[in-house]
Length: 359
Image (cartoon, rainbow, N blue to C red; front, side):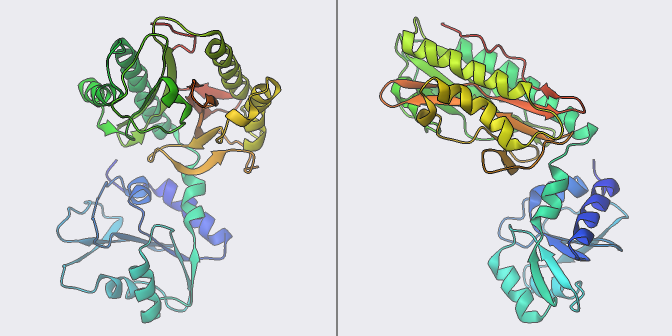
């Protein structure tokens, strides 16, 4: 996609209108990619998409290629120019201006100094609300990224052996993704062996895998601009009764949460469905994070599956379901899948087995 997606733009403009706004400046590169199909990393330089009813105006430094699209009015500038002043010349200073939460403070302060608008409103929710529900093209990209993740997990699991370190496996995982044709990794792989698996977001280190250890692999890639994310827990040689017990609980929690997902069901209800199973078994305090996060162009997008979020599920939403139990000094288990909400339920994007695996 290398042109303005008019359907997406119209939806965001409708969200703006619903909040009494007529204009917005988007500086989040992911949101700009969502609307224009152009992935631009401008570093410290201002990249801004100014949208209003009459169209799109993309401010871009001449160092970077601009999309060739008649529906995007490109406003180029040089390093020696005052980019914020140029942007202020585009806006309607008699109206409130929506800005996104990614806007650098130096840009916002300069716009305020120049009187670029009558007021300034955090309007990120206008783009976030639209991005939460994927269209068919996006759903296809999410499926392809998750399919690559399934294949990478299979290869990474085969690399598990006594003596391999967490760092070595993390590096091997990145190489696996490249071999499989991924565009990159969506986050640094989380690899945790033995007692380290009690840390939900352990940073891989020199710890080596030993017989009897659990091994958490939380990995993801980028394909065609969209992210995947999946976690599986493996065991080397043998598995203790305690870890076998919590594995079965986490698996049940994952299945239970996915079984209730359908349009209209609040995120908090989905979270509770998984949490009650773990809590009833006496491990509630050891499930110490939200059940999931939204995902798409970014691995963590606006929205989550937690007790604090009563937003109802809607067709097209994609988010993770990742219950876990983490026992300090012993180890942990997490089983994570991505789901796509459908008209009648949900589609699980990961096909990799959730059965207990002892290597």
